[in-house]
Length: 120
Image (cartoon, rainbow, N blue to C red; front, side, top):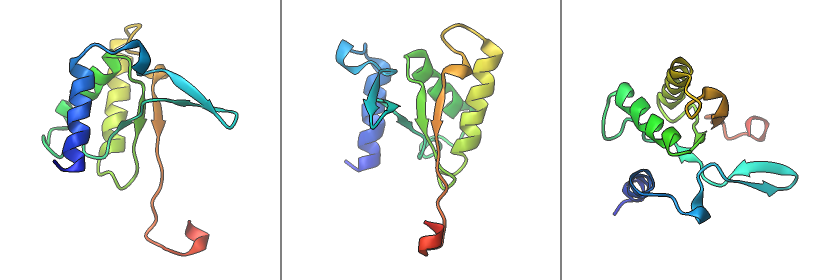
């Protein structure tokens, strides 16, 4: 099984099953005087299996409904940053206590084509 398929399978298991006390999705950990989420949902392949951005937003909404609030993205992940923006707007429009965009955390990065130290 390819690594990407394995990750998708693990994601499906988390969405489709009850979460144990040991794996609460919004749980955080301290590291070097900073607080980080224990689980971060990757947005690298949002459109790989289904080309619909609307379906991707629905999938991400299901993660949020289960308590996941941290998402990893990057400029090289295709349209993932825009899709996460759509999720943000959707949750604001719903304005339910469990689906507020203010609880979301996005981790992004810029990847340069340059291998020089100045651009690292």
